[in-house]
Image (cartoon, rainbow, N blue to C red; front, top):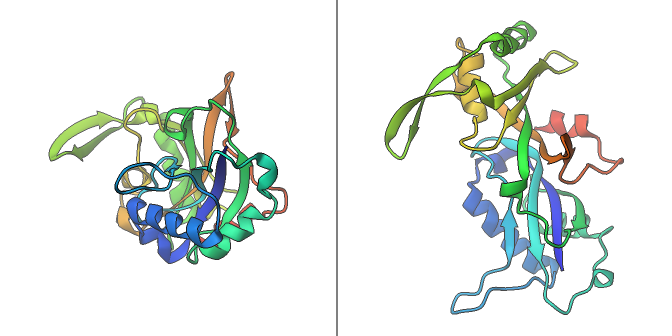
Length: 237
């Protein structure tokens, strides 16, 4: 049986790399006593996998972890209602498990299935006018950005990676829907384009959703439980 959990990465832990976060999860699963399956060989590792990597320094309330349990464990053996609190108690501050479900048999990996993400961008140096001005990027037919990969620089048109930009209801943040297929546009790169007068390193980013395509409509990997206040989580970030 495989489980899929939705979790946060908020606060100081945002500076933890993807690899270090994976190690923290492995330790937390041991502390929680979850019967996780392990690989074979000289250095067995827990059979867990992660969704799209979160850029170091960014925060999220929509991180996903797939956990494979030992073969003799059935769905009835795991209490999914108490599992989020059980795992949260074993993880460092800033990591909180919001929901856990049984992963559908044969479901694609998250790297293959997720087609877009929603982000919030903000900074004390930015105003509502800055966020409204940033939305004008959607009017451009082309947005060329200098990018470096493996020591080589290239000029890429990133306009096709922008689905939508809009201020949040308070006007304090920019909400961005970005394509994740191919070489995705990172939030820091969007900040560089959206806020030319501000150092993009000063702009904070929060991932709020990862989306799947379901017959032309998008749906969340795991919807937030009704008792979770999204606005409160966003304020904490």
